[in-house]
Image (cartoon, rainbow, N blue to C red; front, side):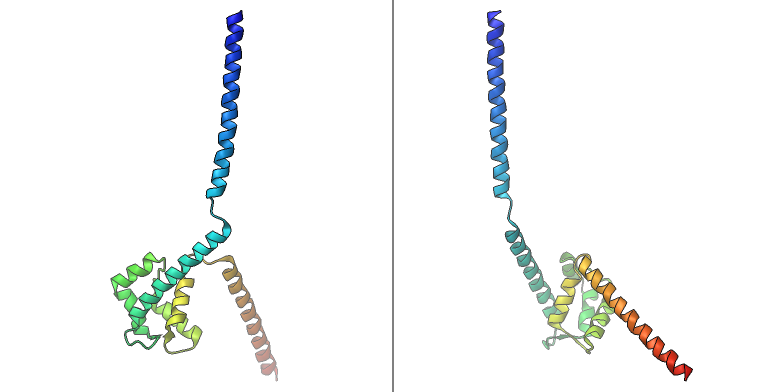
Amino acid sequence: VAWEAAALFLFSIAYMQIAMLNILTGMFVETAMKAAMPDHEAQALEQRREEFRQAHEVDNLIRELDRDGSGKISREEFLRITSDGRMHAAFDILGLSIRDADMFYEMLRKTCQVKEIDKDFLVGACLKMKGPASSIEQQMLAYRMYRMQGQLDHIERAIAKVSWM
């Protein structure tokens, strides 16, 4: 019986040491994981750096489009994106898939109400096209549609008043 009690005693001591080692290892790993995780400020700074880098790349691509150096991009200059495979690939790599370049250009031109689009405005517009629309952008569009509907209703009422006279 004495050797069985001694074996049980040694087993319980070994079990407790392994359990204690496991707890200490878990605490160490948790602390190391927290220390290795970048804080929110560092992540935000890194994201801003990446956005700045991409804006610089788009600016360089659009500068290549501006052959006359006017700072304005004509429709013809912009449509070179669709015909130049290198430019198209560069835009695709940046996540800027412009499938209908003519429509995109005309939409931007009409938004600015100009004949040719300013290079800096085009860079900003291209970067906004990157990725899916955010919730705030969707809400902004819904609000604009609501306001436009109100304006159309007002015009409709004004026309109805005029037609009754």
